[in-house]
Length: 195
Image (cartoon, rainbow, N blue to C red; front, side, top):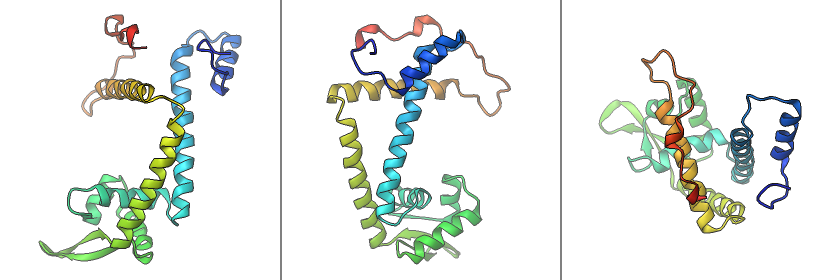
């Protein structure tokens, strides 16, 4: 049983094995965070894949549709911009766009600003499919997160944001050759009163 009165999970069992093995360089609190974030991510991803399959979509196609749906140019973009945003080769993007166009979810149109170029836009069917799948997935995610109170959800969001911002602040810059592996000083440790 964990120190919070909760039932042990698979991460607690892993941490116990690490402790038994005497691996002193692994901080169990940090390892618990990393393993639990990874486990939650994998489970959420599987849940999203189930939702997408219900609409005949793959995560790769969903990524393209999401860029179009949430983009700043009224659900339109150039294939090159999409490929760059999604870090894909032009060939991989063409393949995804072909499948989405065959399904009637996107269409390619001449670019009104440059006749040599094309733009890709979500069709009405594509917008409806994205909106419906996003709504259903949102409800599923809310159900999963409902084991936490609203205050706990906000607290978790705050802590995860802090962790992500910490990554961004310590990430190696393109021109930087090395990054210190020293942990942040204890002066920047968060207040225990938030817990």
